[in-house]
Image (cartoon, rainbow, N blue to C red; front, side, top):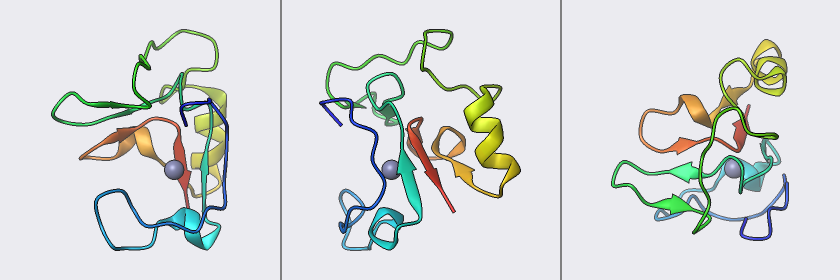
Length: 92
Ligand SMILES: [Zn+2]
């Protein structure tokens, strides 16, 4: 994520748990993580130093065409998650 790589399959657990991530099942995609960081309730942001700036190029909001395309196909967007706002993450 720190290198701003978009990615999909990655056999790993969900951060801070021993549960397999949907990335481990090939059912998740991360896009533009520096423009769309994960923002935690305590204010932490990953990748470190990233800033979520809606309206900046490559930054997702609930009206962005890429977000709409995933949702129309039955995927969930991490920007809609209740705990962490995982703006780069899509899963099905
Ligand atoms: Zn992800």
